Amino acid sequence: SGLGVAKALRARGLIDQYVTATTAEELCALLQTGPLLMGLPWHEAFSTPAGPLALLDDIPDWTESPVAGGHEVCITALESVAVDETTGGLLYDHTILRAQNSWSASFGDVGCFRMSLALYLALRDEIDVVAPRLDASR
Image (cartoon, rainbow, N blue to C red; front, side, top):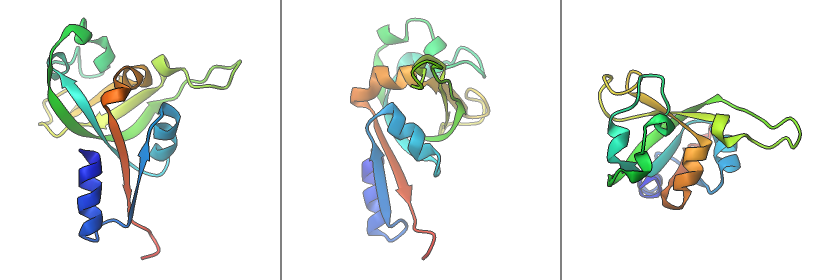
């Protein structure tokens, strides 16, 4: 888990703090300061993206696909942020995360994949998001 990684890094003195995100808004805010670790249930269907630029959300019937196991990835960017002009809130279906996978560059977009915040919310109860940090003043 990302929490386990963060605790081990802290115990070894490689980071001095870590923060967790429990909401989509917190996740987006933490991404403004650097990459995040995200552990999520990896459905078998996620292993075959619909195309290099497609979202995991675009995989047909992924919800019916069995969970192959847990998977830890690095969320590197908010590729697209969409805001409701009336409420100022995030439009989860159109706000896109980019994640670096640990597999080869032949997976997805040179080893990366994309997912919407809507997919994050659909899996939220089984996801952990951790931001490991090293104080720059050290």
